[in-house]
Length: 196
Image (cartoon, rainbow, N blue to C red; front, side):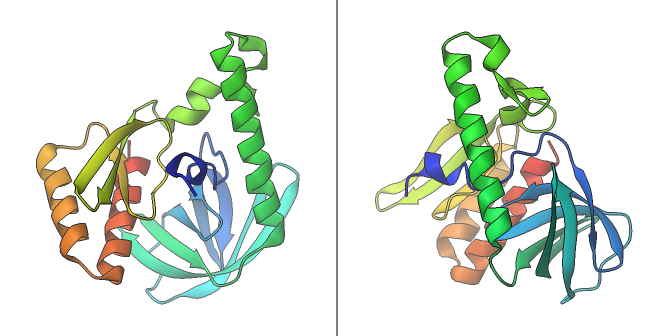
């Protein structure tokens, strides 16, 4: 699967959506097929497992999840099981985004709408910042600009405004780490893009 296709494996959230992780009120800032990144006002205990409940358009979702990473008022969770409804909604979201991109390329602003946002707002993330995807290849690190903040399986995506010294730290940590260190590096990068 190409990196571009990987970029469409999440709900196209143009703003945080409200939800619940067990008894904790949360705001979802990113939802993929395998997990979610949430903002929360209360500290969620480490190693928590609970139902993540939220509405996406006309569908109510309930997915068993467990905490994977926390940073100040943000918490990343991974889904314990796959969810067919979520998978279908992600596919619908990807089709909407592709249709909007085609309309954008054709200069057809009237069709360049995903939900209540134009493609420009939807694909640029919160605040309209750009992103850079870094991928580790056999001949070293390669990077490219990205419209979406999606994390590749062989590297990470960060905000384009991230300082160079932070990029170097992430590259070194990812390159020298084991599978767990690489997963944590991607989670840190994911937190950085949601803060932009």
